[in-house]
Length: 329
Image 1 (tube, one colour):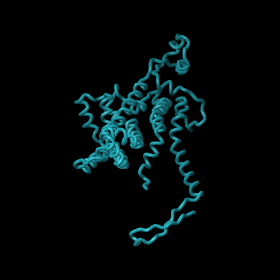
Image 2: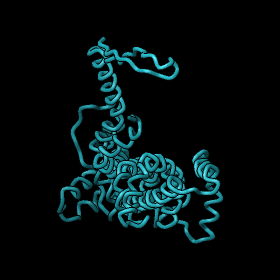
Image 3: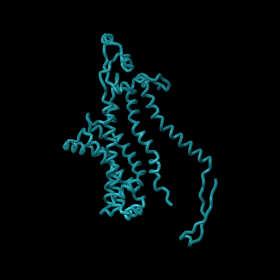
């Protein structure tokens, strides 16, 4: 262990210099910490890898026991995910012309024919519209609200902030019945607008509290200097504060999107067709004799991609956002 010593004068010691040390971790301890992180990452990735592999299995391989790690890859799960199929008699199958595509051939090998596209694509598009729409609205409104609380004297500010935070203290599904009745009266049931507004309301508390912390860390002197140069308050906000808050906005957007993207209970209760998202749809994909596990795994894999891509694109902002304000000079 290496240590650096120095002296500092504090009021508590009457202005006398007090020696202190800054310890530097040993190489062995750093290697141990790195090993723990790697092991933890590998363990948490096992379910994701298994889902990815299951999407390329046949229905028989997906339910085999013991589970198959080495298997012959098949795209049957993805074909079943995007199509509806119907079992036919051998006589009918013999009367059909030769298959024109590889997926037709794959389906016919099961004595089935494709009757049309499935509803997964529509549900996937609904998830994109509702997830990203509510995230944008929650971050936009949260940014304005956090700026107001950070820069202005708002009457009953502490009480209002606590009220906003209190909406996060109970599970949202606890108010499912009142929301269901309200949406039915307002005509918002099974609509994109209704789900966007609902997810925005749920995410507002997280957005306001996260962004207020970032706004408080931005020195007010920046805005004051801009306004001295002739900027209005609004211009100073957009040209000075907003660029400084990009890190916090990106981190907040990721957390809001994760909630809206994965939400299941409200999507199951308040939607049935037009605005139904992917989470309630994927678990009910039916195959021969029950759940089509390769199709479920394929849908889950595709469902993970947008959030994964969005997070990777903003990963640098996310890391800075989590540690923003942790080290002060």
